Image (cartoon, rainbow, N blue to C red; front, side, top):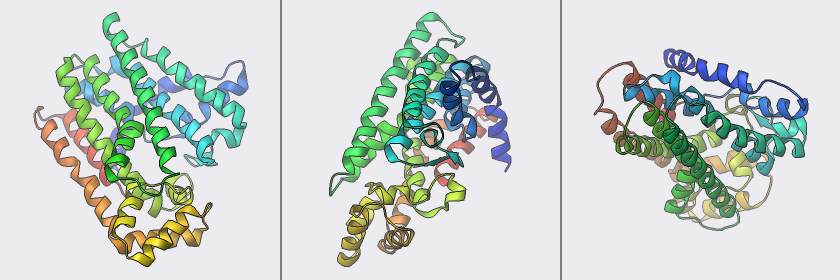
Length: 327
């Protein structure tokens, strides 16, 4: 609870900035749809990471608030569009944007959030040259997120996916936005490009662990805890690392049954539970838990180079939480 309170306090300037940027104005349907998911909640991990990275290198995190808010806006734009593509009707415990406003308005709102994020970056308190660097960096990041999303969708049509392919998809779809948080926050805080890139790689590694653990929770946590339907990856036939490991490790009968559930379309709750039981029997759940934790060692090595203090302590606690959080 103490960590959550500390992170919420760090996120407060971003929460205030989001409410300022996303005030409802004409055309009201667009701005209500834009604000719907960003203001419904969320852990704010990416913006907090940007602010902590800024402080870690000796900067004033207040200068990084617009950039941090832009990252959260990009993240939420991807959530709005992902929910449309995945046909998920729940997000953060509220109806998804398309469930609340319709598919067309949700897509339009996602597009507007995407554009608005770059306006936010230009409000960053830094030099024109650095502002230009950050805009380019974020643009590349968003394009790579789209590459990862396409890989994720393509994997749904394939019988087999190699672990290395899956991890590259995760790096693009999920981890690089964490990397952008650490990179941009550090640059605004005064770090040179070399130092900022090292922190970026550290954040990418922990982002990999975060997504593996997120897949784990998707399969095992109840919907009321997730704020979205549980087992949605299984229902959609996604080849997550859990599935890849289970198909590789399971006994032949279990392997065939798991493949049938994944390829059978909208699985029932009983079929989802059966798939999770196969994952557990095969050792896939334990293997993914171990892999997620394994990413932490490199993180600890990088952070050990920085002096002890509140920014480092909170950074360490945040990254530990991301890959070990429970229900």
